Length: 399
Image 1 (spheres, one colour):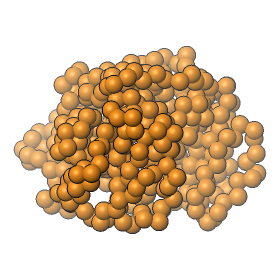
Image 2 (tube, helix red, strand yellow; image 1 turned 45 degrees about the vertical axis):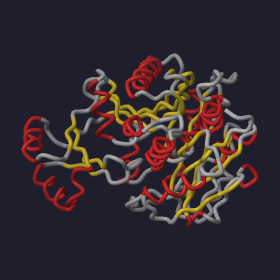
Image 3 (cartoon, rainbow, N blue to C red; image 1 turned 30 degrees about the horizontal axis):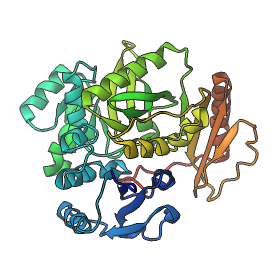
Image 4 (cartoon, rainbow, N blue to C red; image 1 turned 60 degrees about the horizontal axis):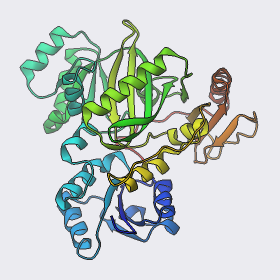
């Protein structure tokens, strides 16, 4: 790699500012490709050498041609997708330009809910029973064998976008008719009631050198579809669930073949059998300000460490910096007020507040996990009274 490596960042959403700042701090040239509608977004322009804009609805061929044109005069050393929806685009560009990093096949395992389930199952990792929405005879056999409810999931959406809970075959067939030719882009799986966990990790040479397990207060799908206050909190280090999740996360990383980067992976512990099942993963940092929550507990900023790993590549060894092992949790809710006043929430453990219209959000941190639990539970009750609002889930993710 040259003395000043060039990092090309690709994103259709406004995120990754700290990634780009860290690249600049480490002496990289930073280029950003985004969409025209984000021309006035609050990018860290002091850390970016050039920004290039694509039409909002660009085609794959368009970005290949555009980046190939830039490559006539610029040597790209890394191409990084800052958002989940750009993972496949970045892989496509790496394949076309023959640049090191995740290729098309591995990218599928971190974007396509069908591909990741098949691969995980084939590698011996427990997953909910599922079937590709493709052959009707096989679908009928699945519904005869697996009792409802089921969950109909788009294969390449993020978060809870497009997910539907199905209670009978009579309900499924009209739902599939409504999808038309898009049916094959869906997967149907059994609904497992239970607690949902996530592990956020830093990966170097297929090893999770840093992994933090958290537990959601309520399943994100339930919060997204039914309304509610979103919470998640770090699991105590001496909790057996923490070690089980860290080991499962490591097994999954090796099974799916991620060499280096960051991951956000979700598991569910079945209420009936107590076993952990793999739900989904992504080669990106977690949303819902999970980055800030991890940093509040450990001092590790996942964006910054991701940048360091990309810069190190295979040329030199990545070293995780010293960090704390405290505890933190986050609470986020829609708010009735445009600018909710949270000044009455004044405990010293509050280390971060969300600044976003019609939202309220707080992160609390402490060396004592019980104190984090106490504050989150108390604040959740108060937020329902003071601010809580609900709105329909959008058809596509918001920036």
